[in-house]
Length: 400
Ligand code: NAP
Ligand code: MG
Image (tube, helix red, strand yellow):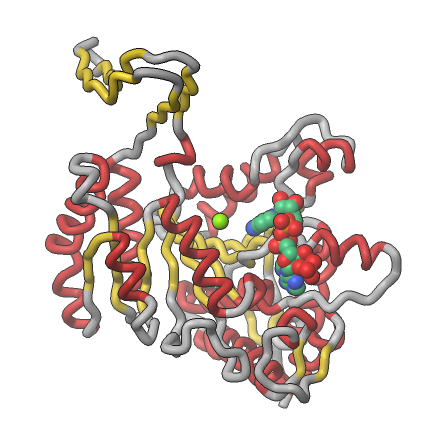
């Protein structure tokens, strides 16, 4: 059988620890036997980020802007312990944060369903995709804690020096204050990315805020979504047979529990942070979640939703076998290869990506899985495989 040829390289962003151990094995066992893999490789491992003063992260994001599709491994976001562990020059920023800021994206997370692991919510038979706005709000705020009473105000000074001033509260005693922002431009990108994703996946798009209480802040989100939908997407949605639904955030949470799933749930930054973890855990595990950053400029970065699985890595370093689940990493590769195939018009690449994902699902459904899944699987007679055995089982399935 001749291997599938690629036209344009994928931007490959390698990472750290256990996921760095799995990364080349996935390529060797599941991709290179079938594809003449072309990538432009960037080593975002913590040591190389440190050596390059994090320039490699910026170079990698620029490469994604050039080639449009990247696949990223999980990376360490250093805290104080990591600075010591790896003798780092400084506590480098989160690579995901740097890349998101450069590509201006929305992160879409979608559970990977298998028939022998049932979601905690019985009615959920189709995946709920969470689209998280990854800019602003409480993640870029200013806060004050005051030990005395006083007048709390919010002041905006425009470029001509004119002030707008609002009283928040006259405080009688100690308290807390918070100021945050978002921009029309970023909210428009968020809405566009969500509508594009819903069209691409042919699923309804649900969006919710608390605009009854937040009459300017949340209201702006609502109005921008409605404006973009009416002017740019209503016809396209109707043609695709999908719908846009807006409601309040508390209403959407209550309704979501009673649906079958199968929609994109567009979330403001904080809602997305919280709800994506709830959805992931209700569907099973972070290792059974695909994740893609979609930029309104047409760039795509595929990744796993979980981290570097540090505890397993330390076992691996001691020479012990680990049962680390590579499913999310495999889906990062299949997602990126499929998108490359679509952009370059290589249908074999698209078909291969579908087959790879199908092989993963079939392997698990026939009872072969890693320990994390065995623990939540309905069946008793499952075989728990180590990290490498699982990849080999998927490879067998793929070759059939
Ligand atoms: P984590 O790597 O996601 O792991 C947390 C725990 O979840 C693991 O200890 C493991 O549980 C389980 N787990 C996660 N992925 C698994 C998999 N593929 N297979 C089996 N079990 C899995 O999160 P963390 O320990 O909080 O973070 C570790 C490092 O990852 C940190 O340095 C953090 O900065 C980084 N991180 C990176 C990203 C990213 O690049 N996207 C995201 C999150 C965190 P058991 O140990 O109980 O088996
Ligand atoms: Mg979270």
